Amino acid sequence: MGIIAVLATILLTGVPSSTDADFSRLQQVIEQFGFEVRLALPPKRGAYGLLENSTKVIWINPVVFELGIARQTLVHEAVHAAQRCNGGEQLRTLGLEVTPPPMTRRFFLRYHSYRREIEAEAYTIQVQPDGVDLAIALLQQHCK
Image 1 (cartoon, rainbow, N blue to C red):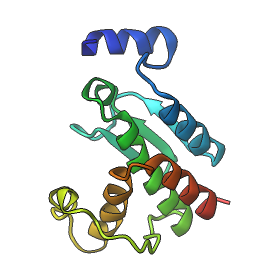
Image 2: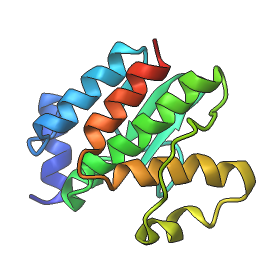
Image 3: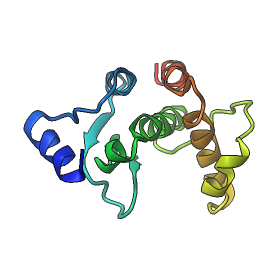
């Protein structure tokens, strides 16, 4: 399915036809904790996903469905949502005792200082086979 078809499906039905059960399940949990998930172009150009701190809106770029990375993108943003819950108005690391896999390092090493730690947690969870369950557990633990 091309990007035009994905966008047309979203416009007509509100959800992409390729949305899988894990994506939907995680989206529901995120929204239960007061966040809004929008399947639309994020306000930051080139972003696949984005958590807007001030509004608690998670933007998911529709192209991620075409690229086959929708689940991973939502997991990444769900970790940021848990970090926001943990830090109030600001993102705060969750203190996860996980080591980022080498394949993720190039994605977060471009960030500096504290932001690098925030991104390292999100990238580490997003690549886990049970990333959806881990993200849900983090939301439940930190967004009570």
